[in-house]
Length: 366
Image (cartoon, rainbow, N blue to C red; front, top):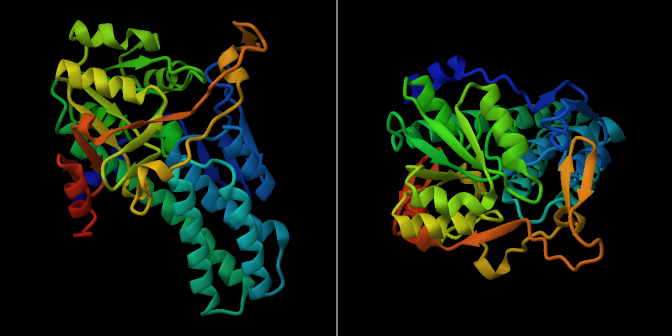
C-alpha cells in the first residue's frame, strides 16, 4: 500500500489547485464564480479567512478544515503577539471566530482543535513566538499533506469497488475543490481507477440550490479528463431505474459513530433510491470527518439564505425564478440513516454493515 500511495502521489497531478499557502497568506480559488470565471483571492487576516469559509468562497469539509488551520497561522502573523501568553490568547480568539463560520462540517472543529492543541504543546517548550509560529505553520502543512495521502488511500480502497466500464453517481462536489488537494473524497476512486487503467464515467446531479454538481463537479471532472454527464436532481430515480449507474459514491460533512451520515441535501434521496434499486451506496470521507461524540439529534443542520432557493446562479449573478417573498426552507445538509449505507470508505479502510460496530473497530474504539 505505501509504495502504491507514493507512486500515485507522483502520478496524480490534478489541474486545479484550490488552496495554496504563500508563507504569509492563503491563496484561494473563489468557487462561487466557477465555472464562468477562474479567480483567486488572497486571505491575509482571520476575518478574511472566516469570510472565505462563511461565504463559500472555499467549501467542502476537508477544504474548510485546511483553510481554518492556516487561518490560525495567519492570526499570529496578523496580530504579531509579543509573548507566548499573548499568542495563545490571539489563537483562542481566532479559533472562536473561525468556529462560528459553518456549524455542520466537523472537519472545521477538528482542525481548529488540533491547531490550538499544537500551540499549547509548543508553548510549553518554547518562549519564542517565532518558534510557535513555525510549529503551527508546519502543523497546517502537515494537515494538508495528511489529507492528500488520506484521499489517495480512500481512492485505492474505493477503486476496488469499481469495474472497467462502470458509471458512478455522486452528488454536490466531493472532489478536489472540496478538499483542497485536487483529488477529493468521492472522486478519489474515480481518479485512482482511471490511473490504474479502468474506464470509469460519472453522472453528476446539478445539486440545487448552489449547483455544486453543475458548476463544480462537472467542471473539475472534465478538466481532469473524466467522462461526465450532468442531470437534473429530479432525474436520479429514472437514471437508477434505467440501470445507467452501477454505484453511488458521495462525500460527507459529518459521520456519526452509529453510521448516520450528514451530507449535502439530496444525499438521502439518492441513498433511499439506491437501496430500492439494489445499487451499492458508499460514503467516502477521512476519519477526521467522523464525530465520535455527538448523537444524531444533537447535530445542528445549517440553514442558509432563502434567496439561494428563490434564485438560480448565472454568469451575470443570481436571477429570481419565483415570487421574491415566498417563504423558504433551505437546509444545506440532510441525514442519511445507517440502513441505507453499504459502506463507509476512509483512509484506514472500509466499514461495512453493521456500521455501529465496524466504525468503532475501524477507529480502534472497541
